[in-house]
Image (cartoon, rainbow, N blue to C red; front, top):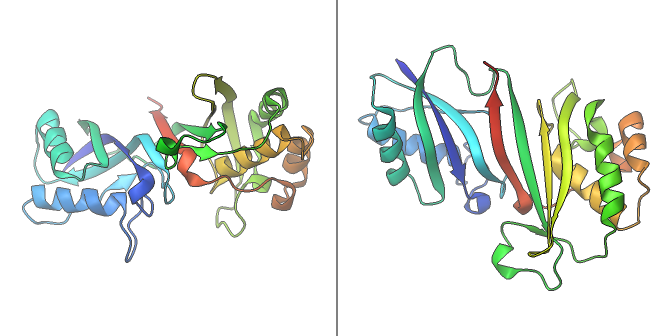
Length: 249
């Protein structure tokens, strides 16, 4: 078998998430259907670097899969790109060592979250940016977001009921950029891994701080007390993008 690594992007609006599900459309299912067709009807299973939720987008998701024969990477990429649905794009495909695993090989991820603070909102971005129509003090958000950088136990920012026991993660970058022309807030988070709904919970908390309904110091309290009830609401998924995945050599 020959192993291939692919970088893909997709519009998450029409999917119930990345992972294959019963009775719902998924990115995994659509790609596997195309690979099975290319593989003369023999089923192919793909493995993703991470799972995105319903409505979440990807600019640089990484997957791997095995095929029984060697193929030209660009020809395979073109075949997959043209035969998968239009809301999935294959950016690159390359042959890799069989030891490569998109999920388990050491890597870091970068996510972006877009918030539309325009009043009225941009209707063209309703599936691609989360609208927040309330007043914000961006200096408060900038002060609070710095507290998220570093190695912390992020229990207070993950969804309750998650099965992951170790909730210590390292965030190497947490920053906010204001796109004044489009009235967009662009949150960027990079790190060695993120818990279930962690980024959406962090963004929801930061927006509440910016709105003056939580103090900046609430971030410290959430990290210390590890209590989800101390954090803000979960931001909607439509503003979240898996931007990039970087693997260690």
